[in-house]
Image 1: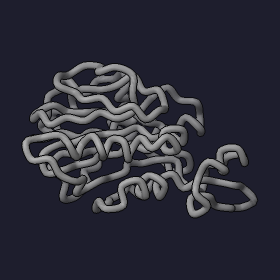
Image 2: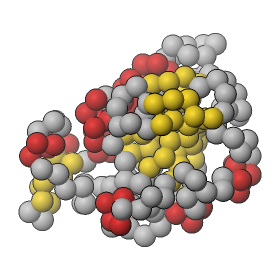
Image 3: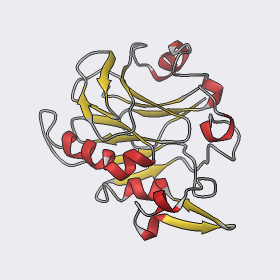
Image 4: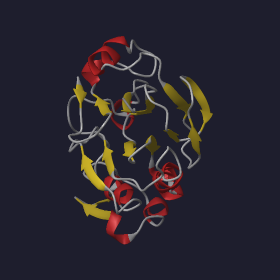
Length: 209
C-alpha cells in the first residue's frame, strides 16, 4: 500500500491498493505513516511555480510545495507524472513533474527554494522519484522530444519516448537519488491516465517529523 524510500526523514509513495488519494479516504495512509490526516497540497497546473506551505489545505496553483514546518505533510498527486520528494537538512519539498513541468524546470526550482528554507539553509541532500510512466511507454511526438536533451530521448520498438526520471534527476544532480522502479502504464498496482484515462491519483508525500 505504501513505499518508503530508505534513509529519508519523512517520505512515502502510495500504490493503487491505498485507494484514490485525490478524493478518497486518506485516514488509513496517514495512520500507517504516523502523520496528520490533513495534508498541504496544490492545484496542479503543469508548470514550475513553487509555493511555501505553512498550514494544511490547498496552497494555490503550482506544481511544487516546500516547508520548514514540522508535522505538516506535503502532497502532490500523480497518475503517470513524476512525484518527487526533496530533503535538505532542515526542510522538505514535493514536486509534480509532467513533461511540461520537467521542461519548465519545476524540480530545479523546488530545490532552489528549499535551499533557503529552515533554520539551517543548505543544499538538497536526498531526493526520490515515485512510480511514473517509463521510457518503455511514454511515447511522444517530435515536437515534445525536441524539448528534451538528447540523452533523455529514446527509440524503443519504433517509438520515440522520453525518460522523465533521468530528466528529473539531472535537475538536481548533487543530491543522492532513490527511485521507485516501476512504470505506471504497463505494470500492475498503479493508476495510469495514459492507460485508461483514470481520474484516480497516487500520492507523493513529504514531511518533517
